[in-house]
Structure formats: structure tokens, C-alpha cells
Length: 266
Ligand SMILES: NC(=O)c1ccc[n+]([C@@H]2O[C@H](COP(=O)([O-])OP(=O)(O)OC[C@H]3O[C@@H](n4cnc5c(N)ncnc54)[C@H](OP(=O)(O)O)[C@@H]3O)[C@@H](O)[C@H]2O)c1
Image 1: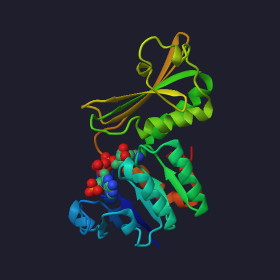
Image 2 (image 1 turned 90 degrees about the vertical axis):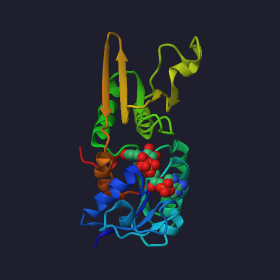
Image 3 (image 1 turned 30 degrees about the vertical axis):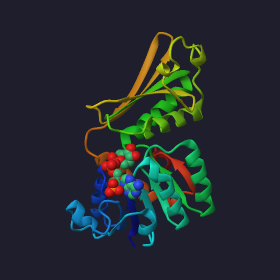
Image 4 (image 1 turned 60 degrees about the vertical axis):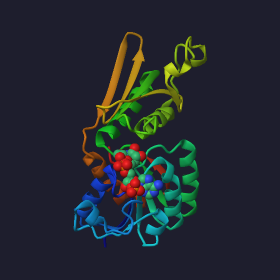
């Protein structure tokens, strides 16, 4: 039987690509969608994809009145947490694509997910090349003691640092904390010039027209440097592919798991 999916943000850049990708599968069925502006319509009419029969609701709570196995959160940082908690309370497993949630948000979500015996798979970036960036960076951090992250995105991205950069900083913190040669509070000049401290890593967010999404981690040690960088193109295809895998696997998890590698074999 097909897994029933409710998709919040189904009319957005990332969500609409995922909706079309779900429609092309035989093991997943989109049963409800969330978008404030398109509420009351059928998703297929909105996206020009007649095979998508799911009704569109204005809120996650309304959409979740239709039973689903997996709720996908792909809206905006200000609505994401409430939607996730609502889905868990309704008994769904949750895949989170939306960026901007903090460590403390994830800690609270983890408690609620475990109370309801449900899994949450949160991926700041579903692209396979990001999963590899994370893995290679974790390996490098075991051997190289200092690093910083640069996060590149389009000028109208409202959250900073990106979910990709936050997740990378979190993962590197699980290996160890980098120790800068000059402590931040000894900086001469504005300390902001050294970036934001995220889980002990300095992160520099660039927001300019001409970028889509990219992330770079630079490792430095005396007389040598290693740069590992991911760059995305302009389509949402890489995120849809990763999200499909997350939807299929999230039911095997309990509590919050971060990153697609939680369900990938390496
Ligand atoms: N994890 C990944 O791989 C990945 C990839 C791409 C993007 N993202 C993240 O995913 C999120 C969405 O990105 P996007 O580029 O697709 O954004 P977008 O094009 O602006 O789409 C946002 C979607 O969410 C809906 N929405 C926004 N606020 C809402 C609310 N309060 N209640 C209900 N629906 C709401 C919008 O519809 P209405 O305006 O009609 O409500 C729309 O369908 C961002 O946080 C982005 O950083 C993650």
C-alpha cells in the first residue's frame, strides 16, 4: 500500500518539485497539501499537474485532518516548528526540509517525537553532494584542528546562517570544537567580522544576487589548507530526490535525526 504524504509548502520552489516527484512514484501518495494562497484548490490545478489530486489547505492543522503516514515540512522558518509539533501530535512521522530551526527547537521536537513514538528526519539540505560534504568534513575535522564555514545564498534568502551551514557546524561540533589561534574576544575591530559562532564554528553568510545555494568549509593548519565545497544549480531537483528517500525511510526512525546520511548506506 502507498505511503500517504501530507506536504506543507507544496506550492513553493522546493515543495512543488517534490509534489511532482511524489506524483511520479507508485509507492507514495500525496493526500493533502498546505499553502495559504492556494487554499481551497486542488494541487494539480495550481501546479498544472492533473495527476495531483490532493486538496490544498491553509494550515497544517486543517491538512492533517486527512490521515497521513508522513508529514513533510517545506514552508518557512516562522511556521515550521508549530507545523511539525502539530503533525507529531496527529501521529505522523515528519520530514523537515525547512531551514532556520535552532538546536533548541530540535531538542523540543525530539522530546515530542519520542513521546509519540515517531521519527523526525531533518535535512538542512537534501542534495547528495551536501551529504558527501558533511561526511568528508567530519573526516577532515578528526585530523585538522581549525576550520571555518562560508555559506553562500541568493540575496532574498531571509534566514542566516543557512540550514546547510548550521547542520555542518553541528556535525563538526560532534567531532571536536575548533580552537582559533586568536580568541574571538581578543579580536581588534568589530567581532562580527569573524562571523557568527554556531556550535563553536565561525560561519560567514553571504547573501548576493547570482548565488543559488553553496557551502564551503575551509580547514587550515600550518602551511596547508583544505577546502571542501558544494554548489547547487538553479533547479530544485537534488532536493526532491533526497526528500523522496527521507519520506520512505523516516518511519524507521525514533526521535529527531539530522541529515540524509541517517538513512543512507556508506
Ligand atoms: N532541505 C533542503 O534541501 C531545502 C531545499 C530547498 C529549500 N529549503 C528550505 O525550504 C524552505 C522553503 O523554501 P522554498 O524556496 O520552497 O520557499 P517558497 O518558494 O517561498 O515556498 C514556501 C511554501 O510554503 C508556503 N508557506 C509559507 N509560509 C506558510 C505558512 N505560514 N503557512 C502555510 N504555508 C506557508 C508557501 O505557500 P503560501 O505562501 O501560499 O502559504 C509555499 O508553498 C526554506 O526554509 C528553504 O530554506 C530546504
